[in-house]
Amino acid sequence: MRSLSEIETAVKRASRAVGFSWGNSEEVGKSIRQLELFGLQGIKNLNQYYKDKITKKFEDLNLINEINEASLEAYCPIILGISFLDQIKSVEIFKTIKFKKIAYPVIFLSFLSRASEISGKKIHVRLDQNEILLNLNVNICSSFLKKEIPEFAYEIEIKFIDNEDNFTESEWNSLYKLAEDTFVEESDSLKQGAAGAGLTDND
Image (cartoon, rainbow, N blue to C red; front, side, top):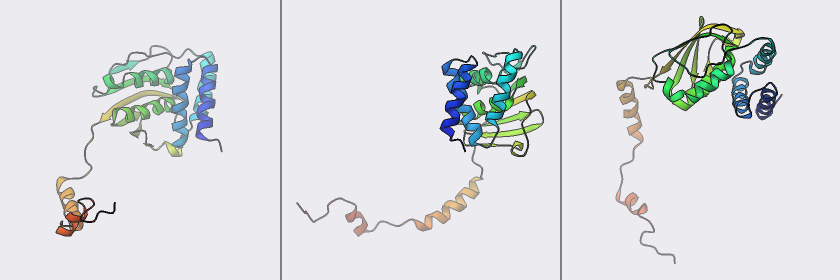
């Protein structure tokens, strides 16, 4: 089994070989490493994308708006992903971000997962008819673990989820009341023991 560091290094070098800068290649290496860690087919999709890149002119998107639609070929998932990371502070204020036509969207998802960590918010993604939850780059929750993510997505919708407790105030108070039973009231002996050297000087 290949190690994650071995995967990251090979992806970085392969990305440089197909024409990406060393900086962008490094970002691709980190993202594919994450996909493989999460059990998604990063290497397989990247390999196929680089083969298609020889004959197809995928579009770059450098400035992300609320609605983004490729004119001819699908968007390059790598340039799109790097742009998303670079613009995370400006795009997270949008209520919804939509993209039309993205090649090999699983590659783009890996960048979105890293964006979730940077923003400190979960990201909900609707990829055509499938829903995905990106959780601060800790995991990717989706139904794709049992099937392959398609090579092209015709519509992707992205929403940042505001951080909220997953429990009610009464549920919290009930639990906290139980926790109070472990609190120990300070006695004079505890106070004296915590004060430092106490009455005994060993010097």
